Amino acid sequence: MPFGGLDWLALNDEAALEPDLPICDPHHHFWDLRHERVPYSRYLLHELNADIQNGHNVRSTVFIEARAMYRADGPVEMKPVGEVEFVQGLAAASASGIYGPARAAASIVGHTNLNLGAKVQPVLEALQAASPNRFRGIRHSVTHDPHPEIENTAAHPQAGQMLSDDFRAGARILAKMGFSLEGWMYFHQLPELADFAKAVPDLPIVLNHVGGLIRTGPYARNPAETEATWKQNIALVAACPNVYMKLGGLGMPRYGFGWESLAVPVGSERLAADMKPWLEYCIERFTPARSMFESNFPVDKVSYSYNVLYNAFKRLSKGYSPSERAAMFHDTAAKVYRVEV
Image 1 (cartoon, helix red, strand yellow):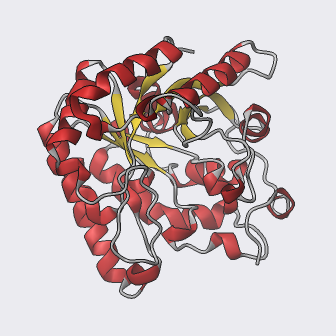
Image 2 (tube, one colour; image 1 turned 180 degrees about the vertical axis):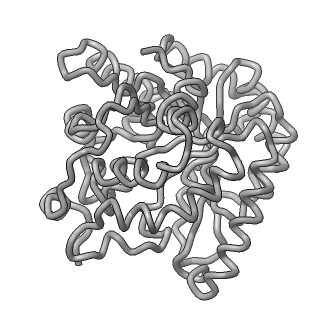
């Protein structure tokens, strides 16, 4: 069965549409020697550049934590600082300009365990010291599902983390220090996020991957119910003005679209049609001022190429005004992550 891979992606090669439209890609990862991430066990600056500098006008990107290059030694809570040190070096290399005009990892999102409560501050200070000019916040994944067939990827696996006093105490320190939080959870956890967002209203929260839509396993048995619950919960979170939405992540196989198993990779016309109902609902609820198109590469690269993905975004957004499109492709991300390019 086809599953990612450069040879497979090359079977559907598209030229970039609207090549002058400025883009800030607010969500990608770097890692090396990640054998569980086959077929992309390596994704560093050269691999990213091959994707983003292939026709689209990607001016800058935002790195999102991926549990890569953690420190081997020292206190457990400080080990994630190694990832920001690693990415700061790649960002500096990109900023030299010798790899092309795009500025990779112009802003950096790392990780710390918010369950540390008040003890999170020295970790945040260390993360900021590792990248004084680019560190913007953290991601603390809380993905949790009771069904054994659904992948639980949380770094600190436990249910109901966002409701705990310690997690909220850590989040308040995050907000006080001027940083943001990435929200990565499943759609049935979104009511917890809404409660959390109201409890920490000064904290900018960026909801990843259209709110953790799952349409596999038990959630594939009644798709109408799954969609209705997702919509209801998206609306609940969208009512919180400090929450922003990332439009992407649908290429992950757990989202149930099946593009990764096609004999020939999906093209941008079909991809736009498949994604449009879900992304349009998010944009309707959050507005373009709180929405941003994301690649989620190389995770989503198992389903489509970078050019096909951004062509699909451009196709499905044709009905929006130039200022609304500018917000979703570039300006919202640049504002939230304080991208300095």
